[in-house]
Image (cartoon, rainbow over all chains, first blue to last red; front, side, top):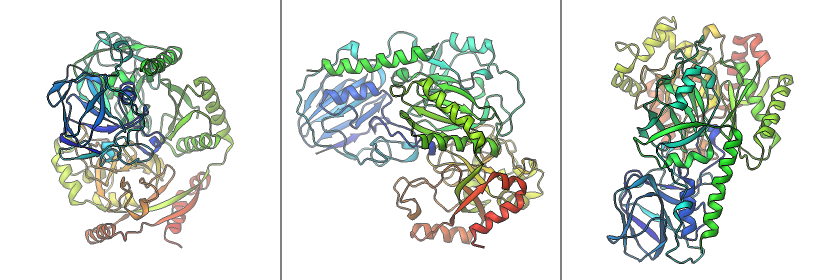
Length: 325
Length: 291
């Protein structure tokens, strides 16, 4: 069975839980930016939690099914329509052969996850089906979807009922305004002054238009003031330069001290900008659901809080799994 | 050199061997990351050496961050005792310097450059005190370069020139990054050269282009069938200036599946290298050309 792409949406890609093990040669993890929503979509249709799905950003695709299928849309509030009839997000529903799945305008969040029972059956590349578009690697022909593409669908392993749903409190989406992202200061934090550090955590930032799978840029806070130094050999003359180093996922670089960039799943693996710290792993999913202009505050935490948050995030998925009939 | 450790969130440990770039710092990072790989520490998922630093990614559900940090500190102090010798490869990379494609691109982004009235090669020659483009090409291609890091994007090598610091070529990045760089451009920023593995944004000065692919996600190119990225940290690169007919012939060979890069196994000793750099580099070149 296959699905035909009638309209691709803005930047719809095949993603699973990612491709670890190759960051040392510049190939990033990739995979869904909101992993909780990706796993939820799979569980709703009876897939393994890490099966390949479609990640649609800001705008849904239009798809035609060549066979009957069970489908679930999670993540952003990107309302699905089947032959023009509304369907619920976070709830599995049946699609008949020949039917068309389309989407209404985005109401909330940024990325919708479209899971189909059996999973998107593109070839495994370095152990993953995720798309890394910058390297033209994995996914469907190494790129975002285009009209006319035909996506192979695997054989559904378990037969589960339609109408299964995920309660609101188990969806793990950003809540509250501004959205709070917890950050462990570190890396090159010592490069900025104490006042700049206070400003970084005190200011409200806004998601800039340059926000994609590589990284999310933020603006609106005060520029960071640097501690003076002699530029080390190899670093470059700008006070925000370092001798090119690795970038952790979630690390926050601030080129020129002005606009912080949080690296995400398609991260550039390294470069020459200093970093003030790292968004904790538990909050990375939230970034994937932020639209441009969303107000954000960075909240300072330590390792114990980061590990606590990590545990809660994992428990959310266990609860979701056990709540499914 | 006292390594500075920092957590990068709950999944990374970042280690800065030295603030400044040097072969000593690079070697120390390479040694420790090799030792971490050999130690097969449970919960470690990525081990990434960089120029003068390294990074380890881990799963804190499998190993406590403080336990891993203690392990790394132990390996770090043990590395002081090891002899700086590595078994590696030397690879010849043909380069068409001053090529038409990077020239077209650098003219298109001239307003983002320090010197809008010249080319990147003319600018780099001038600020490095070299007498014109030909002298610059000679300086760039006569000594070998170390692959001191692979990354930014898939398979992109950062290259560090194997000469005394006062002879090293340095050049700032563009004032504002370009939105386009031809694939396989040989670029330079700070003290590092690089080869752009894919077409895309970039801020390094552009000197030339190689006909030799270094990244092939489809793994169709003969020498990239085993793995899609050519370079590994620790590889040694020797540029070979070529002219346009040689470039065109090499591209035709690549397309026909005939292109065979010159890659030789070699052992490198930092101590011997430091004793007499020029003599050691001549020896390396001898390995490349079988004499």
